[in-house]
Amino acid sequence: MPDAIYDLSGKRVWVAGHRGMVGSAIVRRLAQENCTVLTVDRREVDLTRQDQVESWLDKTRPDAIFLAAAKVGGILANDSYPADFLYDNMMMEANIIHGAHVVGVEKLLFLGSSCIYPKFANQPIVEEALLTGTLEPTNEWYAIAKIAGIKLCQAYRKQHGRDFISAMPTNVYGPGDNFDLKSSHVVPALLRKAHDARMSGSRSVTVWGTGTPRREFIHVDDCADACVHLMKVYSDAVHVNIGSGSDVTILELTELVCKVVGFEGNIVHDLSKPDGTPRKLMSAERLRGLGWYPRISLEDGLADAYQAFLDGNYAERVQGTAA
Ligand code: GDP
Image (cartoon, rainbow, N blue to C red):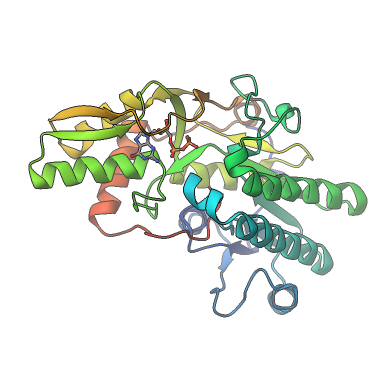
């Protein structure tokens, strides 16, 4: 592992977006560090309002910031609320990144998502693929805002020497996920469908599309661990992918989900639903080179996510977390 270049010990660390899936996992992970975690409720500080963000920063003076606050949602939400996805995300990141510069924050990690990459990027997708092609139109609003966030971090590094870095996680799942079938991603959707099928004694569970698309997944606790690792060891302009390094087909994922949930019926396909992009796998090489590897296998992670669902630890709405 490279030498730590930023020591969190004794630091005051603001997790912006602490109620979201990734932000709350970062708060859990930071409990292992000798630092003070700062959070603020959205009723107290509206992150889209510059004056509120600046006075919070001026009052609290954090040493470091994890910027996990974002307006997120699935394909339907993105397509239905393009103005919200572009405006809210740009405002939040601009306010926090600029405000962090104004009060002299030592280190900031900005979180984005794999949707920043061109639709037809070569796989596994390396960080250098950014801005080399056309985006997927359904989530370009969110992607443009996230690309602007990466560029803001780079600009403050270049112009002001600020140690602001960016990380782009692949598909994250786990406690705090969104299990609403209309707006959720595939992991919580399948967990919920398999659970409902088992509880109702149904003989089958329905999967959207052909089941052949390949996707990469990372448990949110692994993602949070990677964020803390990057905060400590990474300081450069290029953003870093956070991925597991391997992908599975949607059918393989469904079979694992059924095993975890204990559902033994059939898997049927709803071919009226889209497959989406055939494959989305990010290169994990840069992060590996920084000495970080995921620890949670997909099967163990799914079991944990299912337990969180059973415990009621989930959101049923578009919420504030990077995804
Ligand atoms: P994507 O990675 O941006 O395509 O987002 P999703 O997580 O929503 O979908 C990933 C893949 O899972 C797509 O091929 C979907 O068609 C497939 N899929 C299968 N069943 C479901 C489901 O019930 N919900 C969702 N969201 N996707 C599903």
